[in-house]
Length: 434
Length: 188
Ligand code: HEM
Ligand code: FES
Image 1 (cartoon, rainbow over the protein chains, first blue to last red):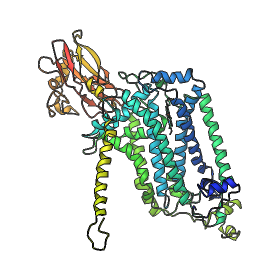
Image 2: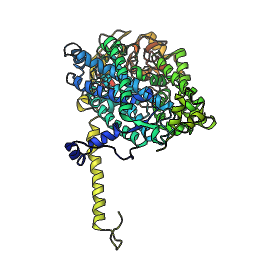
Image 3: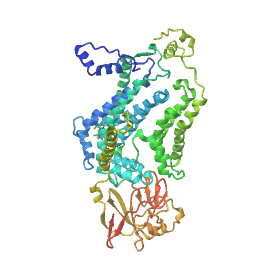
């Protein structure tokens, strides 16, 4: 798509002068104005724009919080309270930042689900997908380290438990952990380095987002039919069509965000984090932020040893594996058909996968004992079976529904109220090529 | 990198190319090291790595928690009953058969005497109060074995701090320590 020749036409003298020196306006115009997008994109495709906005929200609120925050174990907790009570609008900025992290994850999980439903990861978009998973990992690291900064009980013990993962690796585990902590336990050195990295990583995310969008503009977007763009009638211009749609979705998203920020700002947090960190007292119940719960459930589901791998290492490997498997997704799905719309069995399993992921999240917040553990083990098994067994096999045995010949055909068939079951009518409609 | 003049002989440029490349690689690797090594525990953290504790006031059945290297260390003057219970356990019943005692050789078995401060001081148990699962602090005199119980993911330790039930893989670690007098313990 990026190969199409540019339609940018500088009109002012300055515009022309600039265009022959640094064609920044041309790049912007070609990428966000005249750029052709499939005409049938639905609201599931607006989360990319929402994510970009949330990144900016986190960067802006984070940079101003950093003007008032102090990363030292003696004063970190109080400096956050100082932000809440003394700094003008400090409460708002902090609540935006804390809830912003949650909403960032809401958007990224929906964005990923969209990609899985419509098969966005399939050739030729593997690199685009992998860059997305890299962004997810960076987001997780950023959010984890950010949560340590207020230096509450959950900050401290969350950091202890998560850096404790690394001690599961035999031989070098302890050394790795000490390297991460800068000491023998979570302490001032840990807080300082986490602050430094928490400041850095979002900018690295921004860099990977640029690559992600670049890759997107090389291959073009998918669309609900999963059929590639074939002719000009399959597309509309990015502006105004996609711009307005993204704008509306973003506004609705922000409304919900504001509802949380203003009316229930601590709903997603944990009360124990308003107690200052105490290295000699573990809270009765350590729970990570909600967006880590499914992975936490997988970690705790492994209570048995497998050969030389003890339960602790097994849990850590399963947890890392649950994200690593996403990298392989483009090659695990063997079906030639992209969109779940035309894959009846995949559609069923996709929704089971979603339900299972939510169930895992629920289990992650429960104590790890009795039936909860058994249920978590079954859920974990399904999580991995979905990627490693169901997807590869389904592509070989499933009979997909008949695909429309083009996006235009699919859209017109739908418009004539037949939901695609009357291909004859669509075929008769104007399919003006080129 | 091969010769690029007609004769096929390596040229002076080939030599410079390889030599510069090698120097560059070694130089870059050397320059990276300080950036990595600064992450390790620093001198002040290491310097604070030994403490002395007066335990004169601990009657049997009493414990003390001190902070060493940022972690809690449990010092317990065990009751006779606790010692008997720990002694009665067969080594085969232990999840982790090793003593995990820094004062002994790595292969030492997790007998009660090798978990404690040793001959004559068997009532003293000194160990790092950190659950060997993911690092929470277990609660004392709790759990199914009357020793310690970790509330995080449910690990039970016995009266010698040995893991008996739950996800933790190892017995709680006994740090390097010694009695500098009858009533003072030096840890580290
Ligand atoms: C990807 C983007 C980001 C995410 C997901 C994120 C996440 C978080 C989270 C979860 C917290 C803990 C909030 C709380 O409970 O109080 C936090 C705190 C903090 N973050 Fe960020 N953050 C991001 C970007 C940034 C940036 C760019 C900065 C700027 C330097 C920053 C500076 C801070 C500061 C100073 C705090 C401590 C104050 C507080 O706890 O409210 N963050 N962050
Ligand atoms: S940290 Fe103690 S049981 Fe997990």
